[in-house]
Image 1 (cartoon, rainbow, N blue to C red):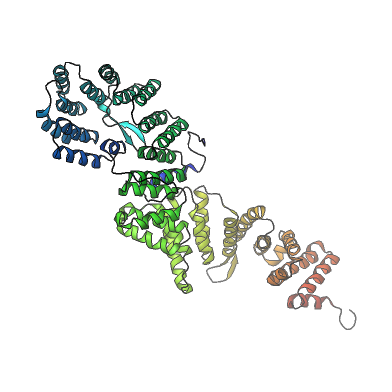
Image 2 (cartoon, one colour):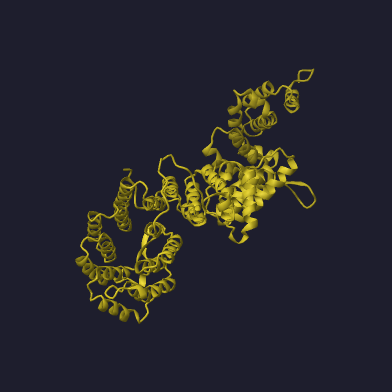
Length: 589
């Protein structure tokens, strides 16, 4: 069996928590490859073990109406009691009291229990009365009272918890159930409930022993193995829990509760594909097509990145699920993940229209990204409008998203749209929110600052913003560390250092020199690059020529750069002019 840790798997904790919080109500269904027989309508006991109390109570009430008897009335009341509706249970027990046998006050016992679970002061007196009437010798009465003191362990999101915590009295339950066991030595239900009582008494070893006794007495082995699995789950021994749930399925392949428990356990440890698989099998075996179960299945598929399966389930159950706006959210997120932005926009827009009060920042994130990636052949102006809408949604989501750097997405759009102040502001916000810039962020930050370095004063005259150029160079330097072979990074480091000063001052400082030299070297053996960067190469050659003329006064180096520039750029007028000025006049001077 594949082992897994009890602790939460390694991953981005914020992302995991966000997903669990924001997707908790999402749902769908997917067919599995496992071949399983379709089960008939489940019996009330199985329905209650699945948490399907509404169906169980309806079935039990109908049976009591059709075939009235002491047991039928008690069973109907018991169903409502297990469903957490003691007042409704009381009405059935009251109807059944007239049919109670003298020494078997079964419905009177049920009535007393309804007061016990509600902490009514009359409960003890009524319990004493039914024990007196039965002389404390009826196994069924003792069993029902003992079970009541366990609070009725009930499925709750995969785990088991007492339905009525205030009624729990484990020692009292054990006392009554042991008396019941003495008088009903072959009653497997008593042994199972004794296991529950010992579990509540923090004695898991004895609890498992009692469950095994129930198995020996002929109880459905799947039910026993599931209960043992429940105990191991509560004890955080998840591997043994899985082992027993799988034993339950092996012994009775149509025992639906074990599939449900496995699904919820795998969900707990973030193994979402396994959770989806067992949920799908549960739905098929239990024939449980309640909307909440279909939605649960869809949620697990989505969390397991099985986006198309999630969508397929929603589509195939549209009549059942379509009234729940949450499905449109999940559809939108799934379509966005499948790179189908138009469908994502349609689904998310529908969700926001139908449930504006439920919108969370992730909805804006997926919707914004969908708009930014949508391509439908429309004119550029229309695309620009969609992009603008997309960024508006991302702006709503970015401050709250701790997992994804939405500011980077916004900066990409602003940079592409030549909105450089906004691009810089977005990346500054990313840094202030703790996001580490990647090489593309650094390059865009550098290039936007470089562009903003060319400013105009109040008279409209061009000025140089030295601080902007310094920021540009600093960002490009970090980008160069991550991607040293990217030519534009080196080129614009040189240009940032050059344009930060007047031309002569820039040459005399020499800060751009090594970068212009590196730039030339990087394109030496790349004819296409030399053609692409012809204007920048002209600037680089002129800078190096001037540097050796003004700073080093090395005529040889100066002439070498001039000759190389002329060879590479024979039609460049500036280089030609420099060469012409260097040529001697007709007199040889």
